Length: 562
Image 1: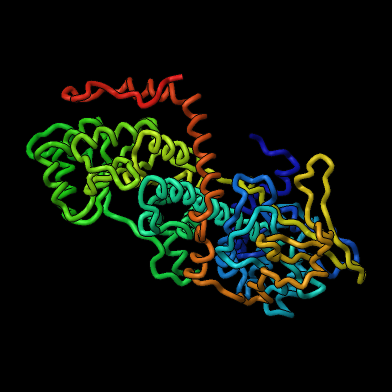
Image 2: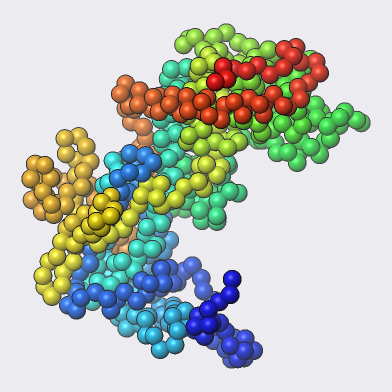
């Protein structure tokens, strides 16, 4: 794509810029540590756009109504505050760097950059930010359409700073959405474990493992998303999330993992037995190297049904059953819902056990399955419901999720927004509101806000009276929003234990209505799958070659093809 001439004039380096040693010496390295550069371009120009005499801007962040999930788990703001806002974040060097970049970015003579405002913060406050941020506690569970955070300037000359910080602060949408989405998946697993197996936290919290590090857009995303997932579960291969929980929430080790193979460590042995190598030898090596505890083996490098027969062979079966631990078999291809049903059926021929107390089939405790291919919220619903319909306990299986856990989300998943709701102009208080006629769902809240508990439910009170005539100004209910940042200092830091406690499922399993709602959604998802993708998935399964000595002959179609 060609660059327009006008943009070239402003932004493209001249030959002098490229060649001149003096110009090179004057260049600054743009780093993530320069807060003055952590905003959207247009916000740099906003300081002159407010009415003359503006002294206060008060804005809030919320997941608006209509997102994927109706209940939110707020998490991650503490990282952004400690990483980017605490202490001296404005220096002369950072001001100079920003000034030089914005002059090139917007064009010479545009005078967009608020150098005067930043110098004021540097000189009066030593580069610390004169704003106050209030937020609900980290890990707080609350309904959608509630304010999670408010931001207000504490110096009348710095009203422009509040919404300058929007770009950075709104990125809390990501860890909040991951935590929320993982919590909803935890509900699914808890509900089906309660019906078919063991819903204890020791079992439940290892049922969804984070495989997402390589699939996210950056190491910082992995840290934020990985830590967010760990507010709900204990299994993770995303080390960045574990170190974030350690460094920003004080938890020495928030997540755990087990030895596991990948395709390179399996295929390097070759497929056919030769000079002590081959696929079966690769599996036996894993069992020998890890004689106790959990160990996971990816088993579909070639033909997963041959692999099952190898595990059931005299060479390996006895070794598996005598291990002081559990072999976790991982398929990595094929339609996941049907692969899991067939894999359990095939393994049951060699590793069967009595039905559990709820009447569902379980494998011998020495063998389990982990499905880590294409797992997300919707596919998880389908798999657990179909397994239940076939009489399998969810005790038999755990799940791993990568892109579906940390990447297939965006700001609109929960419809997150940051809006101004109150201002003071010329000494006059103004309750600010956005009301677009073509998007009523984007109507914003008006006035100063309080987040309170009312009739057992968390609600946000505004300048507009609610059904009982109550407003943020008139209520005497305690505000759930607490100060987390004030004039360069972090306040009310949350420990990991506090976050986990608030983020828990609480009494979810004791609520038949909530459990029933989760199951009803899963049933609908499974029915939709059977009526749509199921037939093509059956075809994919039937096209694959089974082992020649397969005692059942061919793939068993688990449900009627519609």
